[in-house]
Structures are given as C-alpha cells and as structure tokens.
Image (cartoon, rainbow, N blue to C red; front, side, top):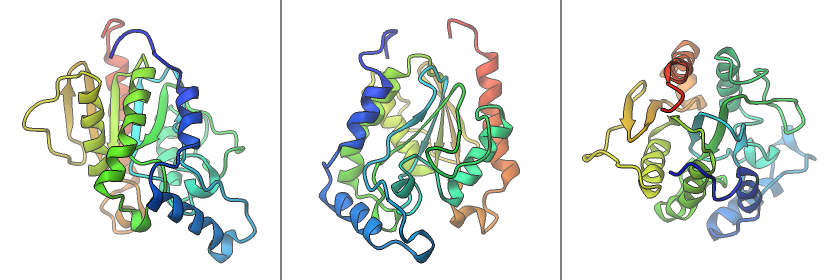
Length: 236
C-alpha cells in the first residue's frame, strides 16, 4: 500500500460525513432521524454517513457492516449508542485497545489506541441490508482509509459483508488476494499479502442474544489480534 499516506484519515472522515452518493440510504438515514423510537425522541440525530474512528497510527483495523439507524446514525460515531457497540468496545477495552468499555455518544471520552474502526457501508441501510451497488459505491472510502493507515497490519472483519469488503479493499490497494477467496468464518485467520485478516461474527443482537457469539468468543478475537501485533517484527 506504500509507505507514505496520500491523504490523512481526518480528511477522509470529513469527506465521508458529507457524502450523498446513495439516494436510498440518504432517504433512510433522514427518515430514521425524523421518526425515532420513543426512547430517543427529542434527540438531535447525526443523520449523515458515519466516518471511521480511532488511532491514525493503528496497526489494527476493525470493519463492521454499517451504522445502526438509531445507533451510529443517531450519535455520529461508528458502533456507538447501540448494543453492538456496547459489546465491541467492552471487548476492545479488555484487550487493551480502548481506554473504557463505554460507547454512549461522541463526548463520552472513549479513545482507541493502536486501533481504528470503520464499516463496509457508512450510512444506515433499511433492514441492515445494503444493496450491492451501495457496497460498491462505499468501498473506495475503505480502500483510502487502509492506504492512509500506514501502520496497518491486522484486520478484523465483523461478519461476511465486512470480510468481503476487506478482501476487495486489500485487492484494490494492490495486495495479492488468494484465489479462490478465503471463506468467512468466526475465528478464521488468513494471511493476505503482508496483512493478517481475522473473521468474527458481528456482535449484533441477532448473534449475541441467540448465543451464537459470546463475550468470551469475541474477546478471543481481539486477544488473538493483539498477540499477532505483539509478535510482528518492526519491518513486518
């Protein structure tokens, strides 16, 4: 991906927040803000694409699916203000990547160290299901973030859509992706060029409430990521 960033993550974040490229997603994010559930009534929604968040010097990149209509779309920070974020940031705190396990809003004091969090799609999609063309339209933001994160070594993909986005973004950045493509699975770890890609079930209520994903299983993903990073030589 090159040793020098062509642009900063901060610049990409600002561009993401001003995106209007997908009419269906623009309409949905704004409609969700205009018709919130009772518990959020009266709150000022972000109602824009949600930028990535974290340490610009991160060696770990976490890729999710998309903001939740009343989570990131409300708070303006990825994986913030919903149960998926509660699970993710608690796990990152326990693994040493976050200063706290609290993920309430943009002013809650959360800071990430050696870790950056992004998503395959930056706007909340209806039914959490972005269309193929929406995924393609959003992918270049992830490609550019990977290029700007010049210390990046390990990627964790939360779910199959994030896994495919990670492989596509790596390929678009000139990394040789194995053929056939590695298949997603929880705990699957593959080397892709000079990077390590780890798959994890998404910490959505659909997975956590059913027991498909436990806190211990999610912790194991980030412990493994931390161990990988710790074992890397300076020039790797």
